[in-house]
Length: 147
Length: 147
DNA sequence: TATCAGGTGGGAAAAAGTGGGAAACCCCAG
DNA sequence: CTGGGGTTTCCCACTTTTTCCCACCTGATA
Image (cartoon, rainbow over all chains, first blue to last red; front, side, top):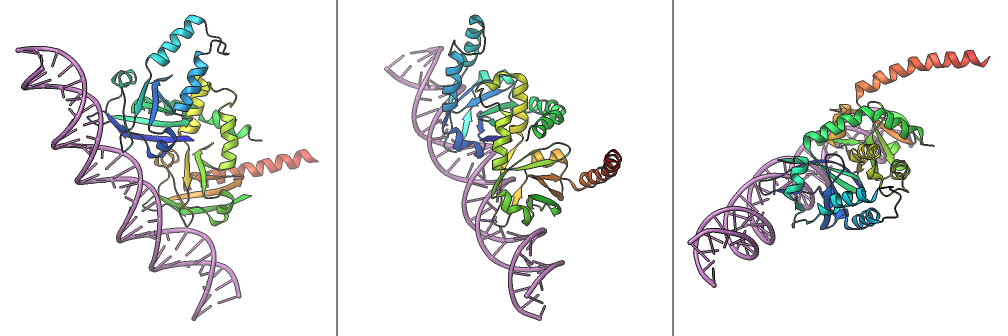
């Protein structure tokens, strides 16, 4: 399971280390796409299969209007990229994706169960702050549903 | 059952001994997450399976499409970590979790039935104090209602 | 006192992250 | 075509962090 938070630098050659803890599960090649919220999503190839199948299935339960679905798919597929790690686990994030979320010198890399998210550091801390305000409620839910 | 209170030091290498009494039940690997109140939760893998299943509504593979679900998952998974004890039962608590509850040189490690909580020492004594006052009031109340 | 278990500390090796040189590749101007 | 400039790729090296292993201390016990 992909979990945890890592802050890594982006060097002059645009390289970012995938956290070692994520490498085994992600493999050598994977898919990076614009995400929802101010971030990027990274899916394993397997997960991407699932996701893309679901998204492009017009019978799905997402109640999209056709036009909406088309434009959404354009968004997810059209701007997706397959990336490959170098021999020591670094990847290159395409410029257009970096620009989308304002990445410069560092990236926050977050494991969210079966995907990885990439944030610029400031957005990530904002996101965290916002989330921790809801945290008590969320945790209540967690604790409350336990049994 | 996980019960009892232990104050252990965090050494320069960030290591903390799990109380020997907890080790058998927790096993060698377990999950540590932000908790409710100013503390961290430690779940056994088994408990975590249950919890994470609840969290990510497992019959919806596209849970990432819903904003509140996204931030919820981001919060629980992004700030969780799988930790493994060394050969003599110590673990490393990730920095981002230490910061969250202000851990420095020591930690209060508390057994709470089927999970373990980690507190910074001061918060824990405050918590205890508050709880014991409450307990007396509660007892009064309970006693009063009973007869 | 000797022994054992639990907790603490620290050296050394391994792994992870970061940086940079140089070959290989690509693209365009001449 | 051909050569130069920029980019990408591959590889090696440095630094920091993590991991592994062993030693010590203390309190409880026999």
